[in-house]
Length: 142
Image 1 (cartoon, rainbow, N blue to C red):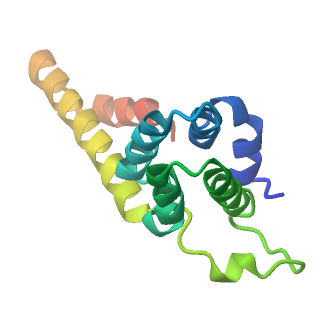
Image 2: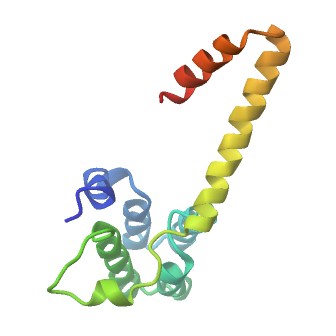
């Protein structure tokens, strides 16, 4: 199992996106499962190609297929960044994470942080260059 992203995924199993989707599938609440999947997709946490089959299974109300798809996605995430010589699945998998969408989400967060900093500097007035450097280092924990 991968010690980077995959290890974190296994540790937080009860609170992760796929765990919640799996709970809703087992309860046959497919609309709630689709809602969570769509939110995760919009942010970029899960790639579109990887979730296409899961989405189709949820739309058709197939519990067994949906659970199979969830387990396939979990396997892809837990093996993310690692090499498994016993399985060729890794080489044929579509993208686990949609980095373009995830990057756009981080860009939005960055813009909000920069706007907040800009608002605070307007309120506080001009400051010395040394103070700004110190603030930047403290804020971003370099």
